[in-house]
Length: 242
Ligand code: SAH
Image 1: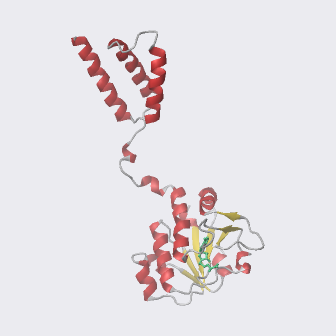
Image 2: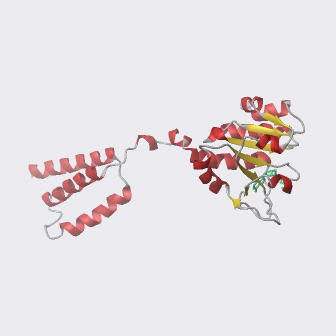
């Protein structure tokens, strides 16, 4: 999905912003950048701000017009901080990412960002199917260009599934317990509670229902169930020794 998405910057004035956009994109696993008549490019300041994403800069397509940059794209979003008098269908970056999760699998998509001082012109938005607006403080709604690209690319990265391969804490090592494991655990627990005289046969059912509720909330993993059953075995063993 991500390789099919192109970020297009229209008439960027500050080369530092172009570098910062390249960095924001590479952080999120994206590298398709097109620049429509940038004021100064290539430029040492852009390379410095890219800090390590200079490959994205080197691969950037420089185009003479927005239609040229969009030529190979079939779905186009225009990012704008401003609501327009003529209304375009609007999406948030999250809604856009949800849509592209499927649509960008088989078609090329462009997300267009405007100039630092004046954004995108209406005739440029005419080339876009959707207007992309980052929800923010309505009294101060214009983000820095690279910050806007960062927010959008982050949402795309999240839906792309690439972050599933990044291990946060021990999340990846947890294998959730299966229903079968849980049922064996509950049977074992019920037997043990009866063996240690915690429950009488007539109470067992309601106690078990409450205990199920507790363990369900805990969303146990496989190893945790093994550990709990180890405790039950020990408890039963001790009972035997009484
Ligand atoms: N002063 C300009 C905004 C320029 S910011 C204006 O009034 O339109 C540069 C670019 O960053 C914008 O053209 C837009 O593509 C993007 N951007 C900034 N803030 C945004 C927001 N809240 N939502 C969507 N895009 C935004």
